[in-house]
Image (cartoon, helix red, strand yellow):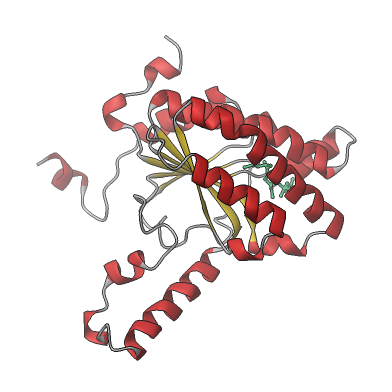
Length: 247
Ligand code: FPP
């Protein structure tokens, strides 16, 4: 029985989020520049998106560029942005062929103009696709997102379109970039690091976390399936006892 066949379709996570980590170390191990790792990371992105669509995962969010990544050496930032623009435009036709919708979360206005334009174009061209939504987190950090949400809520208070007593968890959720998406049930991080690194802090409150030592450019479909199977063997209690879940 293949790993893919071992996946229980009735317990499939609707949303999987991934911190794609280890590109730099992968390149270094091969005596190459860091960008070589990012270039090979694109192959893993393609494999993972394909795998998600094949098994029927509805949302796949990939942490492609964090707010903190702007502090990397300028040449790496430029090369990474070029790679993103190039990949996004090169893959739009394939996304459409496979009925995959592209969306993005983050401070998108801070992206270089060409990157922002290509991204919007791809988002627009794939907007009617329904099989799987691929969400790229770009210039994203959770603290940025939550700060932004607080600012929007404060504006509602100022305009008297919202009363402080009416603020609840739904108010916060509705003002995040992910307001139209279900929360990820599973978060995967590669490269052996056990951190959330400012990624979807609010949305991951009840997510199962899965860590693998594989470096991102080595991550393949089988690794994705393995993470889903691991998730399916866990008991999600949401603060309840095991007995309460059975009854
Ligand atoms: C982390 O590895 C990876 C990134 C910051 C970039 C991820 C980008 C890609 C895989 C390329 C394109 C993506 C898309 C969606 C088209 P790292 O550089 O932090 O690795 P290290 O921890 O080993 O240094």
